[in-house]
Amino acid sequence: MSHSKDNQYRLLERHEFAAQCRLRTTGSLARISIVRNLTSDGCAVECIPANLQRGDTIYLQFGSVGPVEGRVMWLRKGMEAGIRFEQGLHPAVFDRLLYLAHRNMVLSNDPMELKDDAVALRKSGHRMAAC
Image 1: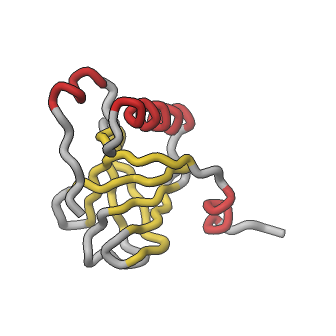
Image 2: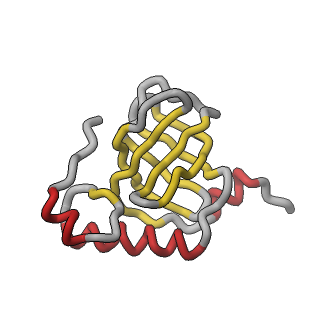
Image 3: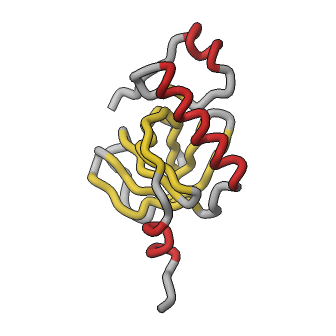
């Protein structure tokens, strides 16, 4: 039995957390959104634009990583979307994003931006996504 890329995406282990990212669609400004889970091939994102459609191309910025191009595979209109990355994340990049996300969960109960400098992040105060 062969697996399509869509089925393979569903078979990867999902890492659950809440972290800020910047989401941009073609021809629009970036907005702060919340990543709820991540695999090397995609993620679930909350606080999405109301006009986002299945099949749309989006660009995600995870702290200093990105933009990462992805395609909307499913969505709950105006609430959340499942994104499949056009190219999977390099294993070292994926591991670093997981490390930063889990470290941020220890520092704050609120979703934080995935930055390497935790001290500066705590001092600056972080902006919450306004869904």
